[in-house]
Length: 497
Image (cartoon, rainbow, N blue to C red; front, side):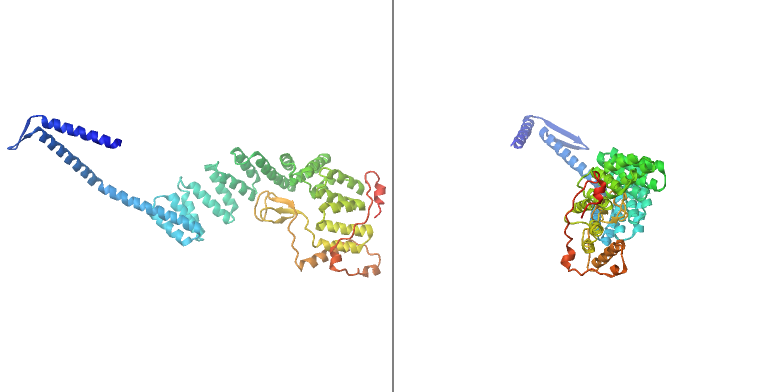
């Protein structure tokens, strides 16, 4: 409505001006080259307006005519860019779809149509990698290093390629160069940390952890844990190389950062024992046991404060187990110590409490030894040995990333390279029809080696065969009378079965 009103107002003004000009009398005469033109003022004004309009139209037409070549060139260039970006997009889709031939064809087309080296070279390199041509991909990435705008992308491509080829040292060099360009980039710092670990540059890994903490990529707890794990590995290396001063410093900081880390406590305790600081080593073990009991800590604890007798050994283990009562490792450690001290009732109670209704292979073997030593009941011992073949496996250091089992803890898994993924837990147990009898024979041979043979006739006696149901069930637990070893050691040694 407003636009219509404005139009009518403008029209009214034009009409009014035209009427005013028509009402004004006057004659205009033009003489030019012998011609005489005589007309009214209104007609003259209209003629001038018409000439002005024609001149404006001619000017605009001439301007467009002059711009026509440039417009044609721009149109062709825009069309070329559209086709180039379309080829680039299709090439990226082909890379994602795993079509190397299509990706390479689109990469060549995009390279011809576009003047965008970062994009086209990156696509060409990815297409070459997808096609299995690692040499061509390396050439493209190396060409990207020549351009200041693409050097970072080139370094990343070369780093990934070096990792795939197993050249960890080369990948670490590329990561260092990328760190010099963009030290705040998360993948650069993570790559620098992981590659430093894999190549054995643990001091450089510590620097990467500190840099990640400063830039907010790790919180305080994560940074302390990573630092403790790396320092523990450094301390273990230094201890193995007899660099006592380094082992002392590394182990001290690692234990202070993560007292619940069993390997840190072990290496710290070993350093303290070698420095004749047994009490300090025992306190360190007790502190770790309160958070995370582990069987290796028991031996270290007894090395720190050597017992004078089997009963004394049991009492020392009892003191350590009191830091985490009821834990499986506490009960198992007490069961071993009681068995060695010939505290039969205490040993049985602790061993049966270690794993509950599903005793592990080690617990079954210890119960078999208990039956043999306490009651000279070889049938009951054999039943426990047979049960051990189907019992859950004993705990070990297992990688949480790939499931690999290691004989000892390491900061990184040698199988998959994962960092800080080893946990002390029970692995999966699988026994087939062939493996079970072999395990039975192995366990029985171990037990037979420990059995005293009184005479040749006793050695030739074979136990009566048992059916499968009898072999699978453990013997009934005999009634025992518990004795406090600390109050009456002699009475404990005479404890009846």
